[in-house]
Image 1 (spheres, rainbow, N blue to C red):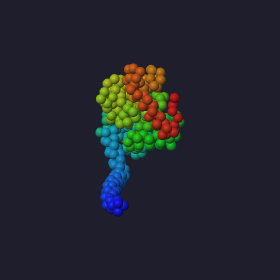
Image 2 (cartoon, rainbow, N blue to C red):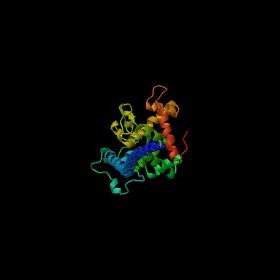
Image 3 (cartoon, rainbow, N blue to C red):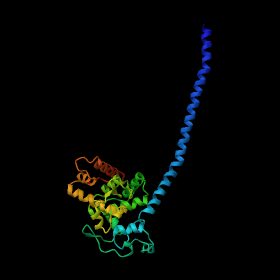
Image 4 (cartoon, one colour):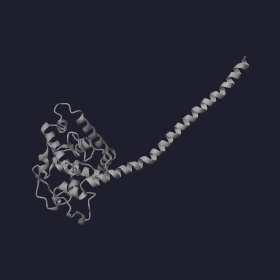
Length: 286
């Protein structure tokens, strides 16, 4: 009897080991595939990310105003905006025959909502940042966070943050709040357009705010100019906050919420504002 049981067990062992071997073989094959995929991802993701950044930069260079045009439109004067990535060659700053009409002649003295715009220099930009109490280290951290999260070229991010600080100082509004609105509205895409017709960085409803573009000496065609859109958007946001009496109510006004419910828009903006402040080790403005 014992011999029979032993014989059965012995005949079962090869089948058991065969099944175990098959499981090990299949598991090994799957692990090999996973390892190959992981290696390919490590090899390919970084170059793909770099290529996407290069393509994004190229699109901005083609479609956005040039650095010189970007600068002139920010100051709205004959003097270009000098910034950390300016054109040092003075010859490159001269007006060219194929420049837009507004750059071929000296712009008239214009007013931004009743206040004349002075020439903008690197010193003005530095003063705007200094007035908020942000150090270069904190600014670098903020710009790195924005560039990394929203897939924006760092040089473009530098320009946008410079403009945000400068315009925010004019309206005495927190620039981190402005940057958070830009993030939620367009993810820093100056060519964004919603189904409702909101356009640009700050998603301005151009058909509603034609007068604000006219006050800057532009038509609503300038809505996709990053700086013009920023100026108009910050003006609207500032008006909303002052008219409604608080940032929370102002954000509801900005997004066009007619009732108490803004669909969570205000909280999304404030959450992103907190993340930006945390990334840059900045205290939240009250």
